[in-house]
Each structure stands twice: as structure tokens, then as C-alpha cells.
Length: 226
Image (cartoon, rainbow, N blue to C red; front, side):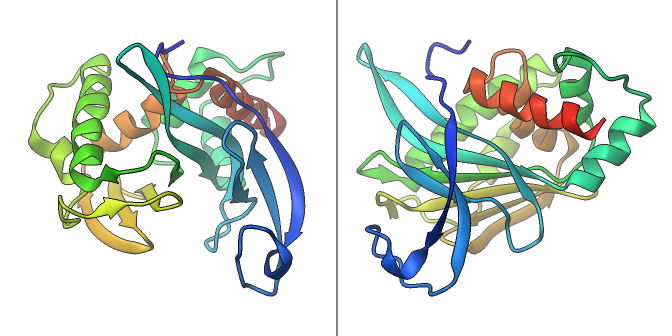
């Protein structure tokens, strides 16, 4: 397990957002899963139909202390996952195997990572540097060479912008290995890179995941599709 992280699980619930203590004003009821360590709620479905597979929290070692940086939710489309697993003739197992995770990492199944900032005074430049470090390391583990492409993940987001508590960053690997990044719901970059798409998914489902328990929960969802 990555020493920068702490495993978590989530609790599912249904909330009517206009009456929550979070001050959200949407009148529609929304099924959510709450990441326990941060209290952040993630919708069980995104607007594009992808379903929540796991939640977790990213922690980083700062001066000997594990600091929560962001909570995250991993989303995917069930049919897409099922189709790619069947195409690889994966057999049912008692526990998700390394092969299953690698199939998801290596194929454009459209994973979306929704991140919600829980660390105060974070800036886009800090996030950019973090992606350059962590995604760059994942690229090397996948057999690639670290390059400046990792710096493009945050795209047009200006370095001086502060990401306050609750700010959202969303990274999606679209069909054709197109990596799309959104900050506060706005697309800040979109470009094709098979290696970066694989590396971004590897961070969460690879051999040394940012949250081991979140990876295991994602694996359980894979088993339910076989």
C-alpha cells in the first residue's frame, strides 16, 4: 500500500439536497455514497450514466504527517466494463485478480475520477506538480518515459487559482485514449495520450494504489459483472 494513503470505505444513502446541512439547494433527491474519513458525498451516478464503483481518500506525507488532500470517487459504465472483460475471456474468481485490474488499466473503458478537495490553501500549481510527480511515476511503472505531457493534465487552469475546500477536479479517459480534465465543471484540457490515460487509472487500480481499499471495492464491482 502506498505510504501516502489511508484506506476508506463509504456508506450509501439518499439525500434530498435542499434540506442537507451542506447547504446544497437542488430540490431533487440524489442517491449518494459518503466517504467516511472526509464526509464527502459522491452521487451514485454521473450525468453521463456512469456508476460509482468506489470511494477513497488521497493522503500525502507532509513533514511526517499524513495529510488528507482530496476525496475521490471512481466511476465507470457497467456495459463497457462487462464487454471488455468478456472479450478477454476472464473467468469468475473469488477475488479480483491482477489480470482483471490490468485489463481495466490497459483498455479505454472510460473511467472517470471525481476528486473533491479537502485540503485548504491548495492551488492549481500544487495540483499540477502533484500530477507531474504521481502520474509521471505511474508512467514509468507502465514502461513509459516521464515527459512534459503530465504537465498538460491541468491544461488552461491558471497556476494562481486557489482550490478551496469542496472544489472539484474531474479526470476522464474518453474513447480513443482521450484524457479530459475539468475544474469546477469547466473543461481545461482535452488531448489524446494512451499512456497518460493508462497511468491515471493505474494510480487507483495499479500495484501500489493511492487507496488500497478503494481498489479492492472496485475489484468487487468487476466480479459482480462476470
